[in-house]
Image (tube, rainbow, N blue to C red; front, side, top):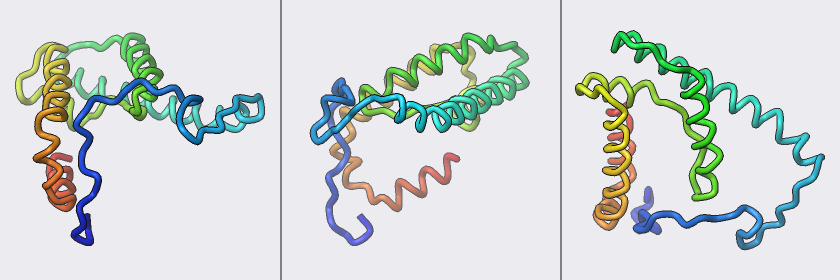
Length: 147
């Protein structure tokens, strides 16, 4: 960490299925009042995510000369974003930088995204002990260079 102490490190296992109401210390209650309070923010996040993903698809259409299927894009994103939190994940959208890099590297099918996901999982499982020694400042610099 910034003060030179060793942190908890990077997890070396895949996340387990977690239900929000079964987490330790959770006082999860679902009521109309809580839904009414959460829905505007949830709707805004969903709309912004949809716009970002569709913008990414349009940019990639221009790079590849293809036409995307908007409904398929949004259904896939919605399903992924509904399942991810149960495994400790967060909502996600298509990323223009990563997708454009994929196309520039010569990717021509969705298989490249599947291979990317498999490599990330393998890196998480195999390289986590080594990556825990990498300073956070080096990780931050890497993220800045990639972005």
